[in-house]
Length: 333
Image (tube, rainbow, N blue to C red):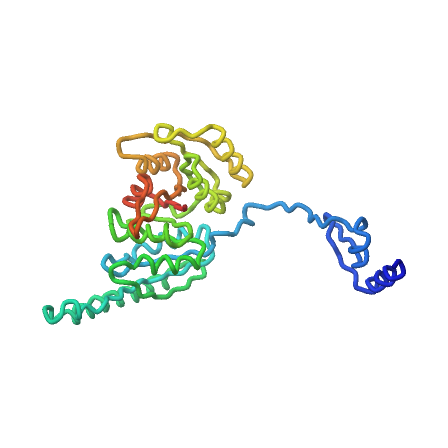
C-alpha cells in the first residue's frame, strides 16, 4: 500500500509548479505539495489594496429617455443634463420614445371616418419629434461616449417599455416637468420596473451641473440605506456630504445614525448631520429646502411606495419630489 502511495506521489512530482501569492511576495508551489503536504503551501492572501476615490467606477453608464407624445421633451433641457452627466459618467444613451397608436377602427367602426388619418398624424408628429431630439443630442459638446436610438412604446402607457430599456444601464436620468402626470408615470415605472437608480432633474433647468455637495435623506430604513449604497460612487467623490434627519417626521435611533456615519467614513466621506427644517409644505418639500440650504448639488433619498395591480402607490416624500423636483434627486429602492 505504501509503495502504491509513493508511486502515486511520484506521478504528481512531474506536474508543473504554480505560483501562489503570499502578500506581495510570490511563492513557488508544486501540485505534489499542494495535495500531499499542504503545510508547505502559503495562504493565498493578496496584499491589501488602497482604493482611492477615483477607483470607484460604478454609475458610469447613463440612460436618458426622451418623450415625444403627448408631452414632448424639450431639447433645451439637454445641455444642462449632459453637463450633469459629464461630472460622473462615461457613457450616455439617449432614447427617443416614439408612440405606437393602436388600430381603433374595429372598436369605433365607421363612426369616426377620419380616425386612421388622426392616428397617422399623431405617429408622424411623434416620429418627427424623436428625430429632432436625437439630432440635438448628437450636437452636444461633451466628453461622454454617446449613443442614441429610438423605441416604439404603447400610446396609453409607454412606461413599461422605457423601464425595460433602462435595465441595460447603471442608472436613468429623467427631466421632470412640474406637476406632469405623464412624467410622474414614467418616473414611477423607472423606479418600480427598471431595478436601477433614477436621477430626476427639473426640466426647467437652473440646477448645478456638478456633484460636489450631496445631501442624504436619512430615516434609518432599509430603503434609505439602499439608496445610499447605490449612490456611494457619487457620495465617495463628493467634497461635502450632509445627512438630513427629520425627527419630527420620524425619530431615528442614534445608534443607527452613528452606524451610517461610520459606513460613509469608510468610503472616504466626511459627513455632517443636520436637522430638516420643517414646514407646512410637507416632508418632500422640506427635504429639498434643507438640501438647498446647505448648497447641495443633489439630494439622495429612498423611493418609498409599492405597486398594486399596476397602480403605483407612492410615499409622501417620493410623491412630492416627483411632482415638483427643485434639484437633481437620486432615487432608489
